[in-house]
Image (cartoon, rainbow, N blue to C red; front, side, top):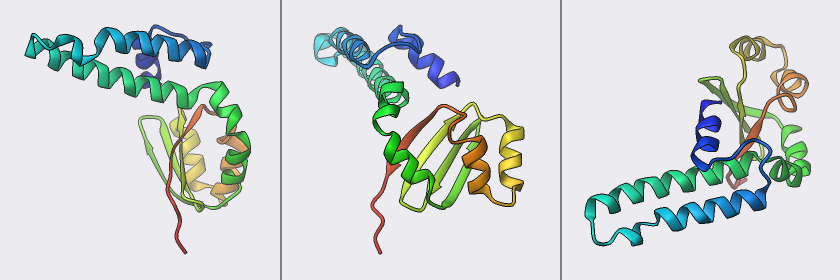
Length: 148
């Protein structure tokens, strides 16, 4: 959750920001911090490169967790979460689940006790459907092509 808070702070937005506003804020920040504006000073150019990379990362992350994005991908998410869980990883209250269709999703702010119940459950897929998939903020990490 710290990552989310930090990215929102960097872009100066809150959780209610709409995608069109987020895009506008992102573009304005990129205009301000674009490395090409700092051609005369190598040190400032390096600083601008790092800042712009962070801004880009924050923008893409916040777009991926935006309610509008999740609403657009709801049908695909439902299909994915109905498939088998292939692997999972838990780190810093973030649970990453890999699915049989090649998708990976991150679930944020998952308490350790919920994770332990998930690990020890008879059916992890059933536990996740009931207690994780629609209870925690999530985002798609990637979707890789599955070859047969």
